Image (cartoon, rainbow over all chains, first blue to last red):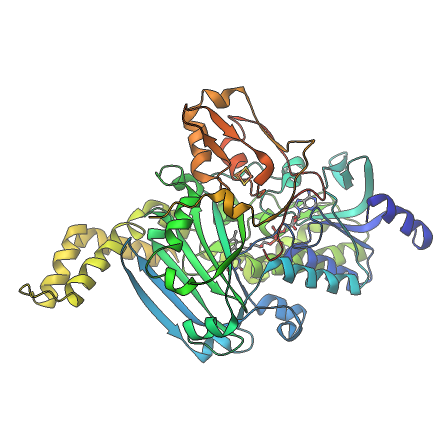
Length: 443
Length: 96
Ligand SMILES: Cc1cc2nc3c(=O)[nH]c(=O)nc-3n(C[C@H](O)[C@H](O)[C@H](O)COP(=O)(O)OP(=O)(O)OC[C@H]3O[C@@H](n4cnc5c(N)ncnc54)[C@H](O)[C@@H]3O)c2cc1C
Ligand code: SF4
């Protein structure tokens, strides 16, 4: 539907003074904010540049359910989720080997701390339907080019020749948020604050997935890989099991990726053909190849999130933490969308959307896990940046120890302690102790 | 190690290419600033920044995944402009 059509539709029934709220971007953050405000009875317009919600969006991924659960209890029963993740694997990987940790537990699946693999092209459409059901107007295929700004106040959006007014505008337009930049709320993110991810979606029959990953129907595994996937640089590989496909990908911090030798598509291909990964996707059929940025700079990259008549949520605000063994962006996006909706609702009742009126958004974020966790992990990105050994030396160190332990070839063997110390000394006891201490203190 | 042509992978995707309008354009410095161009050859997930045998640079926006990597790395150096494709155009993830 075009914006002209929306205007006409509004002309038939509603007042013609514009919307209470315009939300830009129908990702998880925007859909949730729109849904909550629609439910409150506000007139909400949600604008998405893709042909349908989710059509531009990619994630690893797995959604930690807690934040959406709070808004839509038992959503997983109805939503198009893929598999409940009940098994976590973490690997250190070198070119020839991998050393893994396998955690399988019913604790992973308990209500409230459960997580699910999802495919956003499907999931976001469902979320948008929920918003539509509570009266949100959704237009797709329209890219917002600019904001209407009068005396420093955001008063609506501009798309092509159309201008639409609103009391308040929520920018849920993702990590690139050209609009937050136009509103003067933020500058371009730095290459050290963002990672680029590439992903292949590989189709496999459900039974084969269950066999290979030793899981029940509807249950699945999440795997993270450090070392080889990013060629020893900051980053890693991931694998998530979906119902009838595998999401396999590589993520690399931009500032480090450009110092390397291998191009990202080649890293992806090498990871895919690694002896640990290849058998897991054997006979699988590649059906989609995607790429997307991930914010991972923590609070340091956080832009101004409140302006006159405008709020920024989700990836656009840099709300995401990447811990290497877990990426959390969707639960942050959803919770920040909720905080923004609550703030707008309060300001609506108060009668104004000035920067001051909207300050409660920050209070709500402070009360929730969003800013708490962003602050808690504030030193973690720096730790990784200044400790490249995590991705290069340590996987090799483990490979060395494991090879000496398990490879029997008739050569005289050494005592285990001696073997281990030989490898540790290659990196240096002091360095390892210092890194471990630094790592523990950063989280 | 196998080298698979990323173009073959991209061909599986659904794209609505706007033939009339390029949403990403390199500027004149792209030819000479080879260290900047190299960043994009390494980081573009779609492998769209290439060099031919003679070292001439090549770029085609048609397979763009709209990730923003090239803008963040070189928006101020060798890119003339970086925009989203106009509404309805560009990549369409069926699964995402
Ligand atoms: C490789 C990778 C792996 C990840 N893994 C995980 C994971 O396992 N778990 C997890 O929780 N998180 C993960 N994340 C992070 C997570 O995907 C994001 O944090 C989350 O998707 C952010 O949601 P959002 O709604 O803020 O933004 P997006 O999902 O990016 O939504 C933004 C929306 O705005 C639209 N838009 C943008 N500009 C305009 C405009 N001008 N006009 C109209 N519409 C516009 C876009 O089309 C899009 O629909 C991962 C990310 C990547 C890239
Ligand atoms: S936006 Fe991403 S996919 Fe498109 S050209 Fe730039 S780096 Fe490549």
